[in-house]
Amino acid sequence: MEIRPILSALMRSKVSMILIGLQVALTLAIVCNALFIIGQRLDLMNRPSGMNEADTFMFGSSGFGQGYDGRAVMKSDVALLRQIPGVADATTTNSVPMSGGGWGSGISLQPKQKTSSADTTFYMVDDHGLSTFGVNLVAGRDFTPAEVEDHDQGQRVQPPVIIVSKALADKLFPNGDALGKQVYLDEDEPRSTIIGIVEKAQEPWVDSKDVENATFIPYYLPYGNYTRYLVRAEPGRRDEVMKSVEQKMAEANPSRIIGKLRSMQQVRREAYANDRAMAIILGAVIFALLAITALGIVGMASFWVAQRTRQIGTRRALGATKFDILRYFQTENFIITTMGLIAGGILAYGLSLWLMQQYQSPRLPWYYVPIGFVCLWLLGQLAVLGPAMRASRVPPAVATRSV
Image (tube, rainbow, N blue to C red; front, side, top):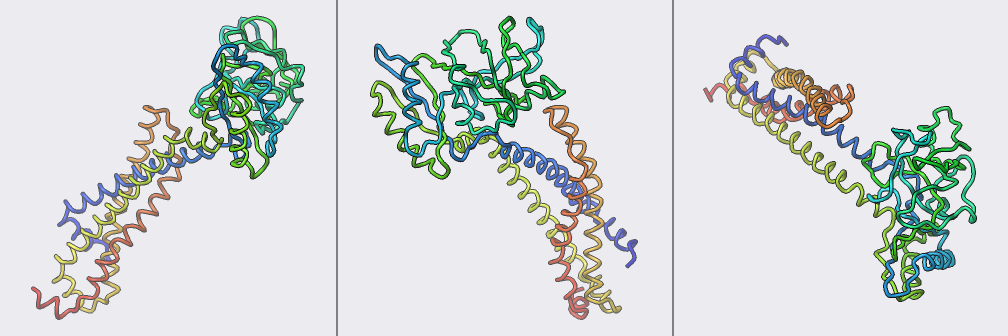
């Protein structure tokens, strides 16, 4: 089949060709970047926290009334929690990964260092903290009961020993020799010795650039009369244990209010709610764009079939087969789509560059555009298939009488 007659026919319908080409170009540019953003959001949503999320839940306790001793209640509560059937372990903590609130600071290798060597979050736990979090200790040892100190709110954070995440250890000591080294959580002495390294532990802030920099500190730290507890249930018993814990805690001390119990899976859902909403919205935009583009191609092809009835009949009378007519419209659509895709490819990379400059978004990987080319080529061919098949079925005699 010669391309020249097809191009000649297209030149007589420049406006339609340009509009469909622009539609294809915009669709490619937006769809490629939207899919890339969706992929980023899904990666964030599926990013492991380092915890045993499936079996773990958290809750808070707020005491009231005169003589309420928050620290004493805290210690008796964790002892009670560990005795409840189905509880694998329990600890007090000031925060948990993905919760959105916590305590963060800089960590330095030298005293009075002007700029900290790294930023980190602090998880204040007892000697059951690592077990309850479910993190994997890959080097060193856990805290001992004797190392857990009573800490007051507002007091400086100066623990003799700490446990850090591997990401933080590698940041501070790139040579991999963090174990046993001393660091400064405060500007002055005393120093803190790294006695253990866990494989992974996220910060409470999911959008932090140092999201895997975490430090475990052996402190008992009630916030006045408020205490947060973390409980890890035996596998498969989390929901059952949550009910038991709520009942036992309320019975143990009526001078307090037990807050809502939240599983770590719920904490994750809430933390990434905006990312999930963005992925859904962008998915809907992609579907709408592809649908509109397909309908535009169908409408254009149907209009051209109606306008070219005489031309189709003449070609059929001169010996053109149904396949020839079908191939003609498929080739015509392929040319229009290709022209739009070339412009769309340039526009896609340009949009990616703009997103990089305005929102510090990563660069669009090169392979998104070629994949988009193939998908929109297929979409265009499928969209034009119906009108093209109707054109191929026009009998020569009917086409001639319609002139």
